[in-house]
Image 1 (tube, rainbow, N blue to C red):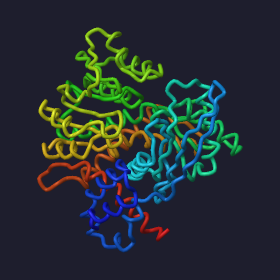
Image 2 (image 1 turned 90 degrees about the vertical axis):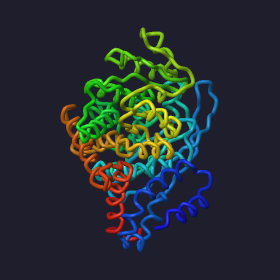
Image 3 (image 1 turned 180 degrees about the vertical axis):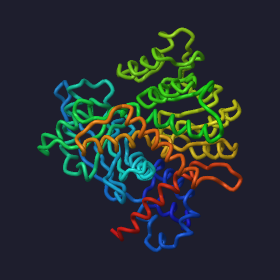
Image 4 (image 1 turned 45 degrees about the vertical axis):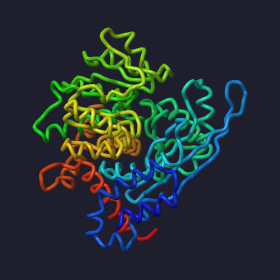
Length: 445
């Protein structure tokens, strides 16, 4: 495999799809050696097949707003790879949604799902629809129109969508209601469902809890713990909420959250009351964090900046892709950061990752760190198939074990001769081998 030649070909075929090309390049660099040691992969053109999605569905979503005006959005569903199980990946509702972002997310999802050890393939979907400021009725009409196009392409053994940015329990409910009406059956076709109609306990917290468990494993492998550690977190949605809850429980102190308007620095750390307020603030449909500083004494709001200028022991970017760049990484390193766990998907730029590696800092990539979300979605699928519900303790224990197993795989494939663990390489190789071997077993299809 020649990474440069493959990337040149992809850039020609998919010009301008920067997020997708960035994600592919990162994986190819990590797996180049193991790929070239296995000529059967080259003979079967595994890479050429793996970097292109199985199919892309694009559709128009027409709906009527509360003023009686017809609105039109674009909808997408990308089936990336189903070598090890049914397609699985979220539905993102955000104005930034485009083909490049969804292809990057679907590609990453393929490896992330493989790391969970569950039989799940990779997919992603969404729309440029913005739920912010919309009434419940408008969101319902949009979701029903979206599902009217999507329902033929999904199913409990075909493709199981989930929530993502802009798609929470309310949206999943409206999507499932329309699917159920069209298909005339109740099945585990969506995850993130309400607890009273097939959902799983711990699912809302799963991504944040899982990320914290993975980070805990990183600390443990260095004979360290969360106790007494200062932690910088970005974002203030469900993921950041889950991180803040579990980090605080394990003895760490979360001192930042952030939004598009800037970040909050709370040197006293978040407590139960403040963490509850995070969710209330997010649910207010007001995509800003500045009100936090007006509610809690001692907290400061820093407008227009990111939290990576704050001195901390652990950085956990939890908002969106490429939110932490090379300059941010240099600032964190200068301030003495000891661990970085990428909770958001591709939250760090290549320059930032290179800086962390050059500084010999333990850096956990998103596809490993945040796999707990899809992991518990897979557990929800299992519960639906068996027509039962596990307790929160059972789900949490399975999640903790899953993240420990993912960490072990990263150690196995990412430990270098000098003892440094390249978690990016370890995660990419572990996920790739599982998917590639399954593709080899199933022939050229």
